Length: 310
Length: 164
Image 1 (cartoon, each protein chain N blue to C red):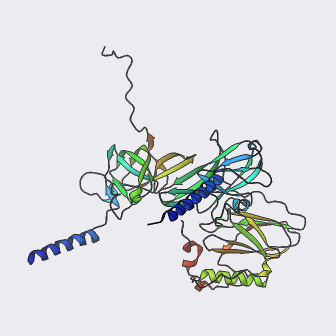
Image 2 (tube, each protein chain N blue to C red):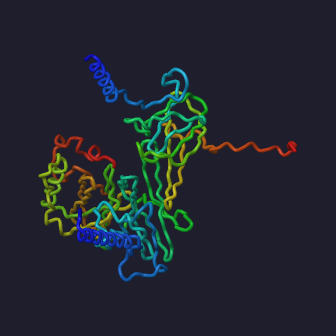
């Protein structure tokens, strides 16, 4: 049995914890401002309500970058408890996913989708979540709707946008980064220079990923030589990506998918070339040499056999 | 004490029966009489999203409560011909399984063929719109048509005199 003082202290601690939780909940329920600068009145922003589908990235900025103190999620998830976000009027790309709680289980979408739309000031938007089951599996897709009329305004991007123009003397590098189950939509795709250090790193990483992992094994760390230039972008649509203003040279495009599948593709930009298209990073391939012989890559370690849908 | 041995033997059989009893069937016949070969029946498979609850307005026996069998894994065998199927949206599995919206589909089943449920769920503001259709598993094409849940009462002929 607690003494009276202990009991009082417990009540105080519990009250403080409850207040903190309620305050945090209040913060989360308030619309988040996904733009820089002072908070604008509702008439000057577009409000996107998130109930069945949530936004985790606006354009190329994850929401957690705006709210680092409040949103402490891993790279694969987002602020799914956020009730609404405010964005500035204009064209924005939203990376969205869904999260559903049924009893004690929480379901997430394996992949995110992107929706590109020209938002209007003072308008309220929402999402509808469409799930289709063909008897064996369920797939989902989001729709952006007018919150008032419920009419569908836009659905997910399924085709790549036309290639952006780069500065003279530089090229646009684009393609699609996806494994059998994962796409790079909402995930990072990077461009690093090709040199001996990065080639060795890719070979070592492929080897590391192809072997049965042990808890005492550590993934090879990226070499310093990858830093100049180091470019990162966020995939959209069905895993499309694009880098603009890439100077002539040799590079690797890297997509390290969520379930441990490491994909890479060599890219060569020659002088005067304006576009390098259809780049497709693939797993277990090293351009410099077959770093891991096929015999040592049993099918069980390939992307199509290793990954399982959630 | 012989009766103690008898009790022990009976208990052992009971425990063995509980532990190693036959698994619940994944396929159930929804027709009377002797079991027919696969070529003489049509099969309809439940899914995680939809389950069959009525055939020709008669409830079918379910085995979802039996351990080891999930409702979504059950396939029903029906006699060929026209049937009225009531299909329910499945929510959850096992002990937490619930039913959501229902729809009636009038379908002409062909012997030897497999059918499955194709569903689309649209969630807006927490409200769920649910559509279901029956598809031929081989071709993927839709079969049957959605009919009203409760048959409407026949319209009275205004030319007929009323009882009063």
